[in-house]
Image 1: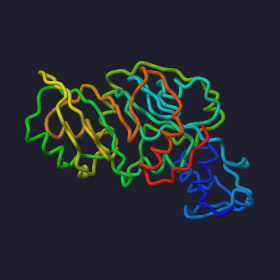
Image 2 (image 1 turned 120 degrees about the vertical axis):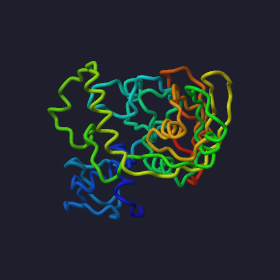
Image 3 (image 1 turned 90 degrees about the vertical axis):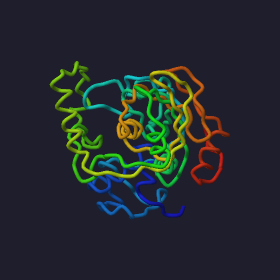
Image 4 (image 1 turned 120 degrees about the horizontal axis):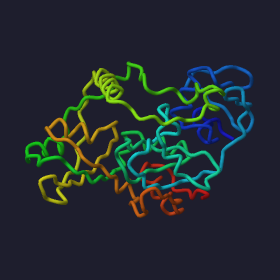
Length: 295
């Protein structure tokens, strides 16, 4: 079998996402034939080489699975949450293999979310260069003027979290100890002081500004607090909220209704498997081969 990048092999085995696999490699948690590997460009043959992650031998690729979920509000798009809030993984029933969210919808947002253990596809979908369109319906507080909407259409400068400042609120999944895993999750109500402190930390990290890619925007429901449909080809953290904040309006609701060729067609909190045809179309949208996958 031809050699492949280590992060791709680890992701295909269902250990973690490709991005997290890169962190595992860089941290020295991966070895090939007894030698610790920390260089991300390293390749290996999964059929001939002995690859270990955190000391455990890798056992080849898992059967790939592709899920579409209608994420409700009040769930975090992550495998586990250090604050003990419900995660989208709590909604999965009857799925016995590990899957991971592709990108994220924030705690207060809802709608179409993809989950898979296909690390290569997830990586392609999350790259801005893939240009896979994502469609949202958004409720805005107050009515933006046409000049503001035009700024969003053309692309505008928004604040983003610095890549060079560590996030204080999130621990690396790979660093959790056995004791952490045994500790029960306790969901506590956050006080106003906690919320203000968290907001202050978040604001202190917004030290860079980037220009968003052009977006399609159209009003779908008029009113004092109108609804707009937005089509984006990138997915920065809290991007929609920050775009509207830049033109002076608060976003009250966000719901993702399309992701590439896929449309939201199930009730909140439910999920379904993608058909072979849907998987082929999704891969084609990213430039991957249309070879049918086992579902």
